[in-house]
Image (cartoon, rainbow, N blue to C red):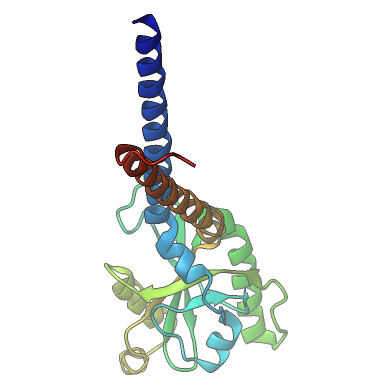
Length: 219
């Protein structure tokens, strides 16, 4: 009687451990993919050089952007201006060959962008090319909220006519996401491995359970 009780207890414990292991793998893997999957897909796309887009145009929504920002106009807004509380993001104007772009950078990149801005204005005055190009990785999306309005106001202040601004079309936001993509390149594959492991273990567990129920010897 005691032996049967111990055997049953061991079997129940093994079933519980297997369920926790399989469930944990499935849940953690799924969550990692949900959080990082979309950024991972963007991060593995071929990168479009931001310097080329600035000089030649051709920026489109959904592009993965890499390279170095070659020049930039002033910071015309920050996240605090948009009602986001503390200043954690800054927005710079970047006119290109065919449209207006907005470069979004986190607070940690502010000083580097300010140096590039100063060199850009020196270039416009002296012809000396900027040397403080800023490393950048991110993606392009549609500019939303008050950003297009604030950009239009800024462009008017520096001498662009409304006709010139309208001719450049709707602005696009080039959003900095290097840190996010670095995490996605790590956590998304880990999530895939965990999820695949959970699925394989689930299939194996059900297979062994059915063989046992059918009276077949376990391998």
